[in-house]
Amino acid sequence: MAVIKNTCNPNTGAAVAYWIPTENEWYKAAHYSPAYNNTGAPGYYLYATQSNAAPGNAIGSTANQMNVIIGINFSVTQSATLLASQNYLTNVGAYSGSPSYYGTFDQDGNLYQWNDLDGSNPAYRGVRGSFWFAGAQAAQSILYAGSTPTHAGNDVGFRLSSFLKQ
Image 1 (cartoon, rainbow, N blue to C red):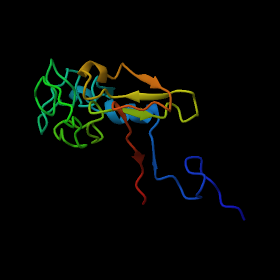
Image 2: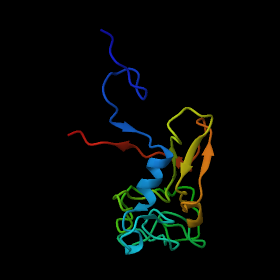
Image 3: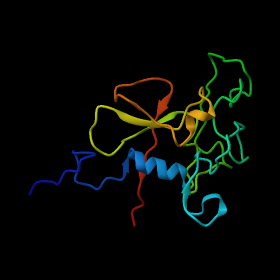
């Protein structure tokens, strides 16, 4: 009997455990809350920090923060000077006071993140979330972009989705 293949990894018959999220999965994980603005009604925030207000960029446990340039200051250095030798990326969770409702960290800022749009195989893939050299406005939930799968640069990364095995 032939091994059943899955579409994410055709070399195995095992169930998919990790994947690049679709646009809808990424968007809901970042922006949705069943108790939007403490109203008890569901809704979507403008930023993945559970806020509609423009975030700051201080690393740590302060609420509504992300790794983006604010004014002229970079988040990592809090300086306006761009240094070629400086790594401007942060580890996921560096902004520990700014999770989404679902507990994801840093979906806005740091790097744009690939998404799989609708799970099909289109010529373009989605990217969301802004990156360290862009301002907070680029992270707003109302904005999205697409890029070819061959795009390479220092502004894009990815986030994996997973499910818990019971």
